[in-house]
Amino acid sequence: MTNKLCQSFFLAFLLFFVGTITSFAQDTPEESISYGAFTLYGNFPIDDEFKDRAKFGGGLGFEGAYYFHPLIGFAYSLDAQVNPYNKDFLNATDAQPWFYGNLMGGIELSFPVTPIIAPEFRALGGLMVARSPEVTYANIIGIEPKVAPAFVYSISGGLKFTNYDSGSAFRVGVRYLSATPKFDYGNNIETKINMSSAQLYVSFAFLSRR
Image 1 (cartoon, helix red, strand yellow):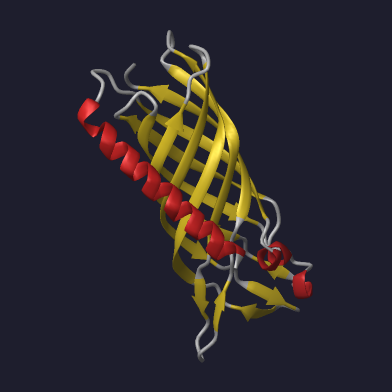
Image 2: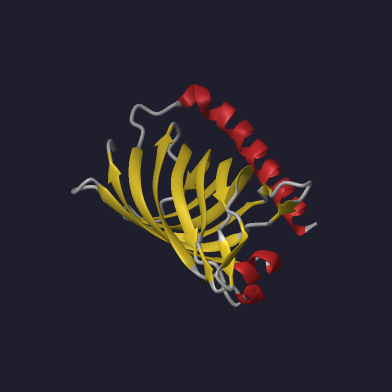
């Protein structure tokens, strides 16, 4: 129920800003801002089911945004995340980590409060490709690894510190990410796992124009 409410909120949020973007489309400023950011993530599962099977992990990503209005832009993100398997779950003797990659696009809002500091907010949606781990019990493979696609969405907020003289920016904030891939283990056995996670991000951005 909680996941469905979050998805409904995300879709309503996205539709609202799509309408806002359309209204600004005919008033595009002469100068736009676009940038690329190499991002380090620290993430930990917050879904009760996934929390039992995974530990604190991390990831690396590339993000960018193109501003067609001084406050609103199109944002995109490509990242890969890894969470070690919790071997205490069912007393596994060995296990590969959880792995998932995300490709998302959506809306970014930025509200400069000074020439240097700007709060920023993002709502993104797209594709997750998740890989479940191979798990071994008493030197016998008990669970085979599987790959599954799923719709993924994220909502994030943080601060951007911009140095226009050097054409760079430093970004820090938090991101909530959620997807529910369905892993097919054969023999009509399918397992859905809500891979929700709270993430801390730190990134360095390169400004291409200002």
